[in-house]
Image 1 (cartoon, rainbow, N blue to C red):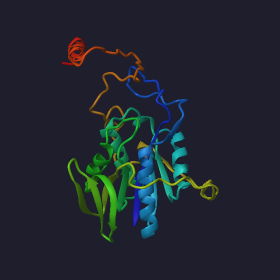
Image 2 (image 1 turned 60 degrees about the horizontal axis):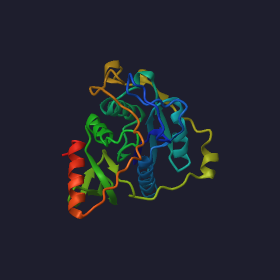
Image 3 (image 1 turned 180 degrees about the vertical axis):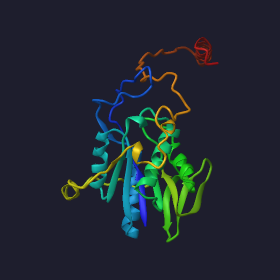
Length: 262
């Protein structure tokens, strides 16, 4: 059995500048870390690996420094890792990102099971996982909160729907996205760090893909364009309303009308 987990390097701080022309985060010189939601996906994959004796790979798209999170995954127990890095991938929206990752997955070898985190902290779309599955033409289940059973040809999971918890069985090859808290992520191992410090991490570019049409990647392949993006501003202003309940209610209603909220 082969498992693949998609991981991403995200800013380690909320103090990130934005390129006003492209709407892209300025990542140079900013401390980075592995996307927290991906840690839950990794732990889920590691649990299945230990139970089924599977091979576990990770795949990430980003600049060369994304090597750091691949090395971190090795310290947790991952067997192999690869990076998709090319200037032509820059500025991708969720569609172009998903397509690039799907091409990368084909390059590293189609796995039986793909596990993704629910979303990333720098995008919060929760769309990449399902879109990868659509590009690969494989079934997928999102919002997985529990792994119930791992069978030879399928996996049984519990997923959190808006009003119910549902038990679903899905055949391999397939993709699942897992919720925060499905398992407690383990800490990196110093012993594994020493054991894997010389492990090769291949880096693939557009020229390595089956589809080399530049119009399908990066800004060229992104049908959604950012009109304006900016970091949130801090606002500590407050106003205390005093008086009887009727007076406070009237003042609050007037304030909401003034702010055009009602």
